[in-house]
Structure formats: structure tokens, C-alpha cells
Image 1 (cartoon, rainbow, N blue to C red):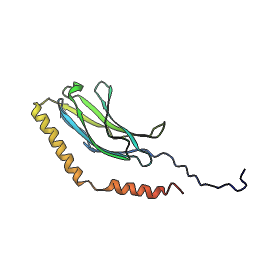
Image 2: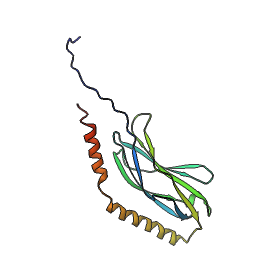
Image 3: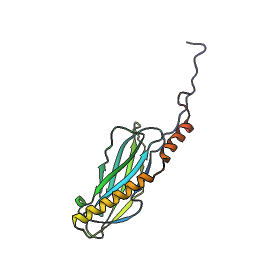
Image 4: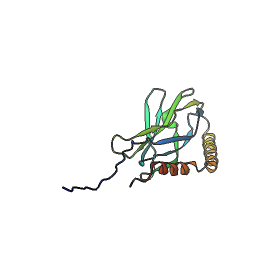
Length: 170
């Protein structure tokens, strides 16, 4: 046994929750039953990596459908658009469908998860396919314009987290 063993400082930090921001739509909307709704969100994990993103869709019957939102590998942050196709849900005029996005980190069990706010889509009369496609294109144009204007606050925030956490080798 070493009479003067080397001492190391160990700092235990609690797991931080992933952060998610639903960028568009930001509030309740109305869409025809045959619409495709582009959902734009960004997420980051301040201490682990993101491993999974899910779109949860609650139908008027209360049933919750889950769609995996694919992204490559495990990443510190993501900025994605996922299309929610309403046609397969077989919705009717005046139905309300609710969706939210959930992200999970890659920490071994239990994995931390965060959810976006819930957004309601009130269903209106179906429209001709060309009109539904035009609405989807307009939504995507609006999202692209917002993307171009978004500040680089995510990068600044990440740098702030690194400074706050300090050097893990200390």
C-alpha cells in the first residue's frame, strides 16, 4: 500500500435534460385532412449526446402514434424538419389532432428526455391535392426564411455551457 497515494478531485454533476425548441409551427393551426405539415425543431443536450427524436401524434380517439425522426449518428445538437402527413390518420372535418416532439440523450438508463409544447391541428375540409401541396411549400418557404434569420445563439449558448462546466480533467 502506498503511504502517500495520488489524490484526484472528482466532481459529480447531475445529468442535464436535453433542450428542445419547436420552431414551427409555434401555435395551434388549421389544416385540411389531406395536408402535410412540416414540423421544424431544434434540440441539444448540454452534457451527453442526442440519440433519438420522436414525433408523437395523438388522434381524436386518444391513441398516440409514434414516428421516429431520423438523423445520422449521435449528435450534440440537431436542427431538423419532419413532415407530418395527415392523410394516413383518416381525420374528419373538425377533428383535432395533437402533436409534440420528444428527444432523448444517449446516457445509459435512465435516459433523459424532453418534450416540446403540444400543438393542436384542427382539421378543415380536404382541398385539391395541388392546394395542399402549395400550402406545404408555403410552410417550408416560411421556415427557410426563418432559418436564414435565426441568430447564432445556439453556438454561443454551447460555448457558455463549456465555460460554466469547466475543464473535466481538473
